[in-house]
Amino acid sequence: MTPPTISKAAAFCCGLFAFALAAPALAAAPTPALLAHQVPLALDGPGTAWILTSTALVLMMTLPGLALFYGGMVRKKNLIATIAHSTAAMAIVTVLWFVAGYTLSFGTIDGPANGFIGGVQALFLNGVGVKTAHALTPGLPEFLWIGYQLTFAIITPALIAGAFAERIKFSASVLFFTLWHLIVYAPICHQVWGGGWMGELGVLDFAGGAVVHVNAGVAGLVCAIVLGPRHGWGRDNMAPHNLAFTAIGTGLLFVGWMGFNGGSAAGANEIAAVAVFNTLLAPAAAAVGWIAVEWTLKKKPTLLGLLTGVVAGLVAITPATGFVDPKGAFLIGLISGPIAYVGAVWLKHRLKYDDSLDAFGVHGVAGIAGALLTGVFANAAVNPLVEGATVWKQAIGLGGAMVWSAVGTFVVLMICKYTVGLRVQTEAEIEGLDFSQHGEALH
Image (cartoon, rainbow, N blue to C red; front, top):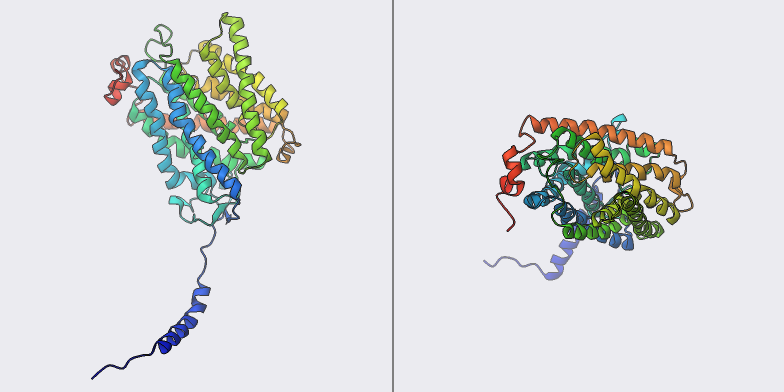
């Protein structure tokens, strides 16, 4: 017997009837609830394009910028090991940022604990979608905000590596980067930018004066003191082996810093424009200030001095760049150059700590100077967010960041010391970390 057939018209009517029955259920399907830190995305196309570009620029600051900048300043036998620190920081922090770093930095938690650390709702980026945005940047896709802030998290521990270069075990640096990101970086980032107590107090940090540079500088100082000086420090020749690498690294850092500071405006706007110009001006003024002191005291201007002055100016303008006019940026740069010279050349020899590549002398000292001077030169005509800013508030914020960084770094170092150990053996240090730690060498 032939089975009955259904006409096309009847089939269409049945399908339409089934859809009508299902439509209310489909309409009633709940949209995913937003997390406490989220808002619906209201896409800012030009701003998104600029932050996409800035993300690439800031990543370039670490690899290859900082890797070459630091790599040129160590002895040849430690070049590979020094570049490995920047590479390891990138890999470790990227994974941690995906797992927990982002939510601890920019998430929200109920109660007073939110003043110090973010929530855990977005672990593994749960709840983040293509249509969500962080409340701080409603015009940017949240994935872009996550990626942009990741590049800041990457470079911060890589900066610290300049303080313990040429003597730390690679295993210790890996464990240090891991613990330090979770215990030190993420809480300080949240306290300043993620809705914590420093931000609520009105502490100004446009692009990372406290979060990145002072934080890394203080941590570097603690590392230098705990690890002790390199074998032969003060006796052996420890001059940079390749200043051409350092010069190339400085250039890459300088270009990348346009995204570091300009991108912190979170859009393609007038604040980004003034931030970029200030980022051009301040390091030039700082290089002039540094070299004037060096030329006067040592009778010869050095390339290393010029390059270090440029970096000091970039560091000092970072907290202020979107809050001051060019006159303020010029003065911040001109003042910070000589101050960083004192920190990098005079202070460490006076206090006898071996900050190998001047992580504290440049990033810590110039960062502190820039953060305090932000309170002096902040201009409401440039950015109305500076209303109510004072040097005293800046000092309170700096004090909080420095204490958290120092204590947290010491705890992390003690964990490393009593698990994997901190320093290589003297014989391995003399041989060079390239071969003793990595089994590689330059030819």
